[in-house]
Image (cartoon, rainbow, N blue to C red; front, side):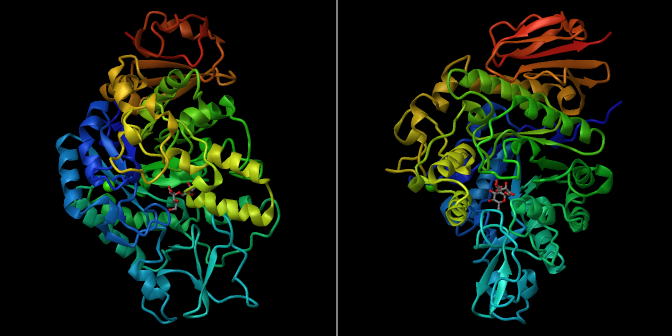
Length: 563
Ligand code: TEU
Ligand code: CA
């Protein structure tokens, strides 16, 4: 018999991006008290854990992913008392809290960095990577993730410091034992404050090749850089240490954000027998629309077949040897309906189909704020763009001239992170009910009068209510947490069909990933002919037979217990 599921295997996680969730004090910026005020809403939705994007003190070069004090709260977000109140109420309502641990880098305003940059023999010098220049230039041609060099020069000592993100985020040196020791203290502090688990930012970037090898200037520079910087095996050692010091003794899970991770690496990170981390937030399926040389700013059309092939590969690939985290969007990705579904005619129908997918695959599902009401991408003009990644990429594109201004703007509007960072649409009131200030910190999607929480809650057949039912279905049945995954019709271009199997219990999930009706033919389907329909996104689910048709974006979940 399978072991009982751990809470985090069964959990349905909701990601809150605090800045854009709800503003409680009318300054235009979302805050901790805003999250507190909406806890009953989240309870009603049925999610059982919240991942809070960074709330630590930060000058906000990258919206909190640049921490200047790990033991304090960002000024705009409130106080430690506000956090305590939020933590107390979330737990009272039965929700766990997952903290975003940003430990690949700190802000340049963090006291460690301020000290480190002072002199070559500063006691904190080796917290970061300082290198002498070469021939009056950067130490190497290493590139940061967003666009341009990874080196910034400091007059104080005449040396350069290494940063993989903006030039206000410097990478920590994990080979210096003081760094992991500091992180253990940070984790224990927040566990003491009620944190039940961690999302580790940039988890497979922590290990560095300290020779900082050359990437060359060719068209494959991005691919080459990524090979060099991701998945350095040293990270496994760091996680074994954190696991021994924190994760195992405190019994808290850690989910690692792992772009470019391979299946084997992911298994090494998340195999319970290896005592590293609990789950992998991998990226393959959110890179299927990258360009051929790994370019994010490409105009590659979405192909449903690639999405299902990738998800399926990760389902079977980690079976019995690792753990997936499931997501279709987050604060770094465009809105899932605009990207993979249809944000016009089939907005809610496609949203329901993807909700079904997210909540029936094996792994811990993460719902990003606003997905439950079907929020969509928006079109920004150049001067409305806020995201640091997009801004740096635009600068870089001006230098290289790779894309025309129009093509670059189109690409940013398609793939850019601002799409998911617009304020949450609570109602049809002024500023979508997000803030009472004259203006929210960031542009509100102009469709808020039609797409908002109030509207979605008031209508029985809405996307919101579908999410509620799908979440409840998943929570009720360990089959969805623990059952193995078996794909049927892997070659079908538009239908994603799979079973989840636990002992004698079986579920069949049928999803049409497109807006066109499709036909499926499979001799294995009639077994489910009189199975119970657990959920479907049409009034009456299509009848299961050897040869059946699925309507646009149709989703059906059937359950059968063999006797
Ligand atoms: O993201 C790390 C990362 O590698 C990418 O997802 C990146 O943000 C981008 O999407 C690449 O195109 C994490 C955070 O989630 C992100 O918000 C931060 O900007 C980044 O780390 C730096 O802390
Ligand atoms: Ca506020």
